[in-house]
Amino acid sequence: MPNHDANSTEPKPSLNAIQRSGKLWRGTRTTKTRRAATLDTGFTALNQQLHGQGWPTDSITELGLAEAGLGELRLLMPALRALQQRDPQQNIIWIAPPFLPFAPALEKAQINVNKLTILQLNNIADILWSAEQSLLADCCAAVFCWTGNYNLSTRELRRLQLAAEKTNTWHVLFRHSDCLKQSSAAGLRVHLQSDSFSRLKLHILKQPSGWGGQQCTLSLPPHYENWQRLPAHLLPQKNAVQAPRLPAQLETQHQSWQQASVTVLASLSALPNVQ
Image (cartoon, rainbow, N blue to C red; front, side, top):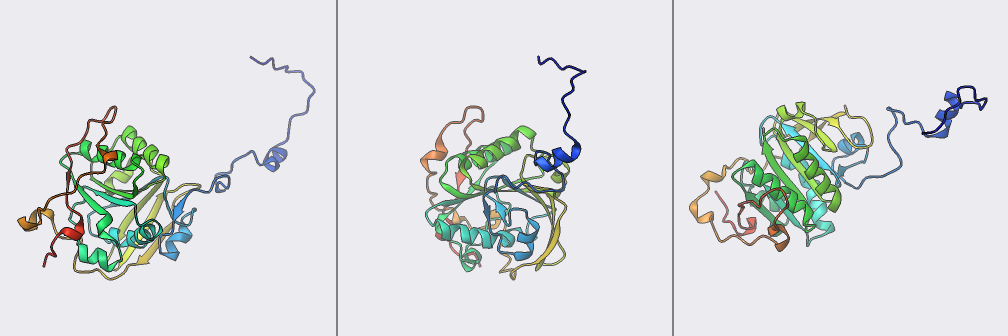
């Protein structure tokens, strides 16, 4: 251990000198040393409230909402469309959505549904395993995952966060708003509230590179044919068409999470329109 001499005459640096050195971090100052990878949200008002000027793509984006269908998917469509245009060959995985998305509405939003695969799962362990493996596979541009009001542990969230960091995959985690009371490893945490089908209020609870607490209200594109509100169990049986196989990268056994029993629905483009 170093020998500290209490009688040393060496002058100690003043507080002003420490502040000028740039080695003292201030809580009111955002970090400039590393610019995180971000994706334009498509909403100028929201970009202005995010320190990275967009959705972080090397971190979990955690969205808390009291019920599905507030406009959360319409909020993400501009960024998802831009992501597909940037790399059309990458896959998009949606894991355990509460409703089967309406393919015509996605096509109207210029989303290539041929690259969108829906995974329907029976339990939270399978959901988490599939999310982690999809992120680590490095064959997906985005992984959206719905966990409802399940109380995810710190370890579970940390594993998803590390997987998103490793491959720089945009990972959106939809949770019930009650779960926002818990601590989370997610880099960005946003509470969503809506007073109509066209206005969405966002309260940023936490974000990378600085403090949270920002709020904004967005006007969303028109709601199209209630495309988020069709429960999967109401679909006609003819929609149960042959499902494509998972990419080989997703079929590998993980060390500690057992391999999931995954039901992969067909690409949305193969499903008949539901009137």
